[in-house]
Length: 74
Image (cartoon, rainbow, N blue to C red; front, side, top):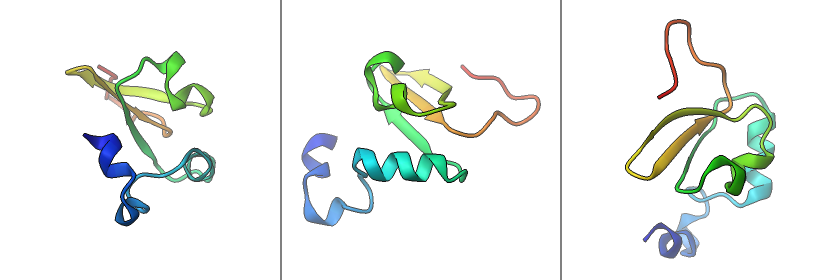
């Protein structure tokens, strides 16, 4: 379902291409990535410091910022 939506012209600011994601990731602002693939097969494999925040329902949530004190990845 998301793949279809990602191809729509109006989705440009919602679904980023790899280059745009990597640029935003390296700038230091917080970026979130949801993937259905394990880290080794996902776009996050090439993102430095990708941290698994949560996983469930076959999806994984990654972030580029360190966890806040007292929180734990699930």
